[in-house]
Amino acid sequence: MRRVAPSVIAREQLQALLGGGMDREGNIVSALVEVVTRLVVQELLEGEQDDHLGGRGRYQRRDAGQLGSRNGYEPGRVRTAEGAIEVAVPQVRGGEEPFRSSLMGFLNGNSEVLERLVTEMYARGLSTRDVEDAFRDATGDMLLSKSAVSQITDRLWEDYQAFVSRDLSGISVEYLFVDAVFESLRRHGAKEALLVGWCIASDGRKHLLHLAVGNKESQSCWTEFFRSLLSRGMRAPTTITSDGAPGLINAITACFPASIRIRCWFHRLANLRAKLPDETAGEVMAHVYAVRDAPTLDAARAAADRLVNTYRREYPAAIACFTDDLDALLAIHRVPIRHRIRVRTTNLAERSFVEERRRTKVIPRFPDEKAALKLVFATMIRAADRWCRVSISDLERHQLTLLRAELGLDPPPANTDHRNTNHRKDIAA
Image (cartoon, rainbow, N blue to C red; front, side):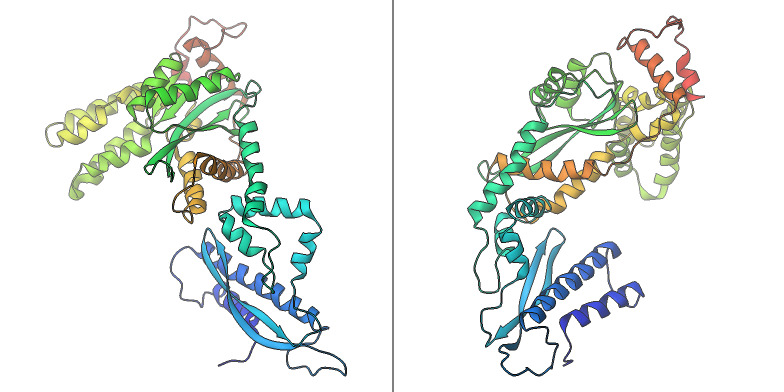
């Protein structure tokens, strides 16, 4: 067995990973995060041990009067949303005083830093018990109790309450997206829907607008969700992208009758592919993509007709799936051509849900609704802070102004003949 410090082994693993010499499966980024985290934590632990022993290195003799010696390592674990990361915790025996972590000492005298660190650790997927264990020094003394951790993380609940009551009139919502993620609540047993809404504004910025418990994706739950947005000053969006949940569609129609409803193409393509045999799926799906990627609305309708007429007898189930809510699928062709890839799916929410599930997978079931909301909110608002801005040119902004006037959402702009409704073809040009 090699007699080297665990940090040396961790550094060798990092070098092997960077050099492609490690046989690892899965995401290289996750592997890199794991190795780097282990290396940093290990070096910090060993550095604190060196400081405690007066700066003596490994195998260095004690000077006269010096006490304390290294006493091997105990297995330790750092728990994260990516999984547990194993570390070796150095031990000291025979010292003048017990070996204590200087990090713990620093945090004990800096309550504001401690509270912020606890909040971030909780938001990044550690349970209150994990956070409590993380702030336990080498003697077993706790810097924070579980109840103290809960009290600190309640700051997230205050942030959430401020978030769901803030004024939205300053956001010029252009494209609205809505979806739901389901989480288990211990009190109720079954999974409940957390309804999420976000948007792309007229300046290209992306905003997380609202997050609320819906119990289920019913029309009444979604209607209450939309009314909350409107009561806080949100203007009616130009388009709304969603999946095909009947209650959601009915709520959109009732609350935003003048807006354009768009059916998510990602979900529809998956449904279509599942109804086609492997040997001919590529051919049929090529026709479907021709509809989605058509240059104009008229061209999309013509491509849709060709698809239906060609395959209606051979694949009736797939064609019935395609024609269901077809107008909402084709509605992407009413917005500027560069924006169609942005509005045709709810993928932005799906990506944030993936991030959210990475955080919540370490929690089998939330104790209550409050715990679920504050953690999901913390995850999503942090993901939203990293969203990139969408480029919207002056021409595209003018096209959207004309489209909103045509829909009756806004008055026609000055010096514009609103009777001309052919601008939809110009948008796609």
